[in-house]
Length: 220
Image (cartoon, rainbow, N blue to C red; front, side, top):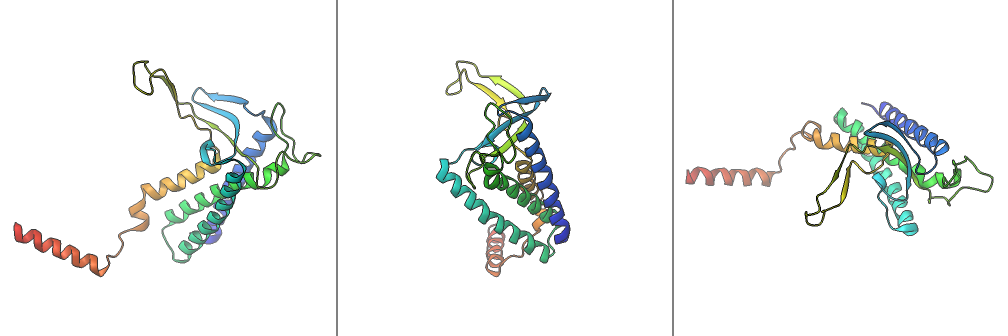
C-alpha cells in the first residue's frame, strides 16, 4: 500500500467524521438523541477531553492535551511514512492510517470548533455566528454522538461496593474518529504476529537459548 492510497484512506475517514459531527452539531440540541434501535442511539454530547468522553484537567489540561495531540500526529505520520518506505505489511499501514485519521479528526474539533460554531445549549448551534464562537482557538469541545446501551443491570443491594448501583454497557458516547483509532489499535493487537512477524534474535539471546537448552539436556 503506497502513501497516496494511505492518505486517501485518512481523508475518507476525516471527511465522513467531520460530516457527521457538523450535521449533529447543526441539527441537534446538546443532550438531544434519536433512537435508531433499542441498543443504538444518536446522542449529541460534547467533551473537553479525550476519547469516549473522558475529561482532562480544565483549560490548562485542554491546552496540554491539544499540544500533545499535535506532537503525536507528527509522530504517527512519520511512523506511517517510514512504514510505507520500508514496505511494511499492508495491515500495519491501514492500522496506522486509521489511527492518524482518528487523531486528526478529534483535534480539528479541539482547534477550530470553538471559533466556528456557537454553543449548543438550549438551541441548535450556528455556523460562523456574528458574535464569534463559543470558545477561543484550541479550546473547542469534541463532538460525540454514537451511543450503544446494549444492556443494563441493577446490582443487588447486598453486594459490596456495587450494591444497588445501576450499570449500563456500553455507556461512553463516542464518534467516528474514536472508532477509527480503536479499530487501528485492534488491528495491531489482533494481527500482531502477521504484521510484525518473527524478529531476528540478537546474538546474546541466541547464546542464552543455547545455555538453557544445554542445561535442560544435562538434567534430562
